[in-house]
Length: 79
Image (cartoon, rainbow, N blue to C red):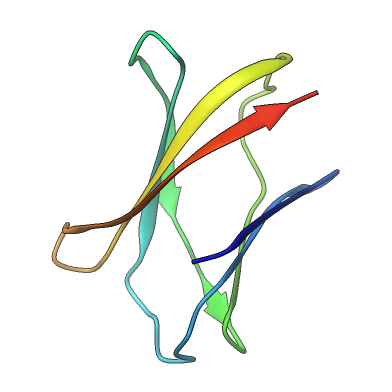
């Protein structure tokens, strides 16, 4: 799951276009849950537009499938 950070959020590339039921959880370095929401995937690309205003810093994003199984974990840096 390659992750690209843009001005409008994060784009996530999937290997399969049938990647439905995914959701994410965003954590700060202290392990506090900042945000959690569903992730829609269209044409093998998922997009997360954060509901929270993220301050500059390091965050951790976890991706889960429809069975709530952790599929990927990434460190992201907001500048």
